[in-house]
Image 1: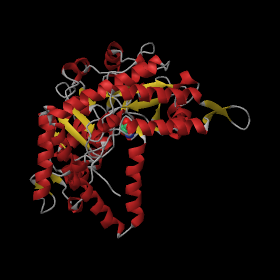
Image 2: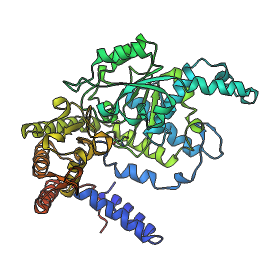
Image 3: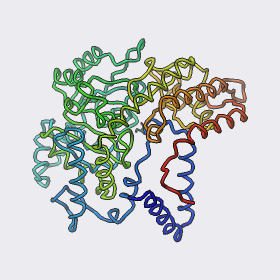
Length: 478
Ligand code: DSN
């Protein structure tokens, strides 16, 4: 394929869009410029390949396909069957999973499918059994009452949000925290690391139906063998949400005890973070849960998105290539280099470092809240997101942390030397930023001061750092 093909494809697409609504075409073009010019350190973002992006922009979007491959509620799904089966096959092969369900639209959808599958599989409920074998019309009002009571009072134990867990793992404001009787495990206050003995103790006391592993802001490996042993010891189903680190599992950086797939009963993920696919979700599971998982649509999900499943098939095929393992290793090498660069300059990091794709800076060490630091970095061309740190005194809105990650910059080709320069730019901004005050003189958690000339200088240096690593080098929209 010529490099020109990518340019032609995207230029032609924009020309067609421009003829209908030029402002949308302009916004798409502007987004490419912004992404090209900013130092993107958001740990959950990446840059999908042109092939992945193009697989989403077509008439597959027009098709309804409730059901599963070969068993649809709509006619004419033969081509959707092809791409869904391909995506599932690539996912099974890539992760060594017994079963893959590629329809979830997002991570929360994947988690809801998994929760439902476990509830349906594990909860002893005569009413649910009747409902499952499609005797729904035979259920009495008392049956429905019992079913809601039984399904609605199950227990889940997951990692707490401020320790790095995800809001869908039982955080109260999320639906998972409302549908389950929920408890959470944190991290050791001294080390910031998961204390497996404490998790085991919590599991013994609480006896959850589901033990959830996985995180969105924990910068270390997790031993999934130990978590599975804990789950087994209390009869819990072990679920892992690997959304953040799926690319590291796919690239065989996380193997053995650190690969969740052989240890968990059910694994969920998104496909767009370190895995570098389209926006979407996926569930992998042991054979005994496959039937329930496949009921995800219409049980929990709306119609599947065939165009996104096509893109998942493309991205998963890419992740099966040998160069993806090299990419995954470079993500971690870069993350370590970034952490070391920050530590050497005096930054305070949660757990003192990293062994995955992300680093969590405790910006209270710079006298700032996460919100102040996030904005000051953004003024300087560095895109990050604020995040709670364990036992965060500033809550989930202002926070005391900045979460950064290397999947996106690694895709562009930046290496460990550039990570050290990135650490220097970040440290310079954070050191130069001061917390502001409210009108009444009290300390503000949002206001800050940063010399605009310095912010501009850092933004120019960030652009210079990126210049040798163009994003989508083959695409010229001019
Ligand atoms: N929003 C994703 C993240 O940034 O981690 C997960 O939901």
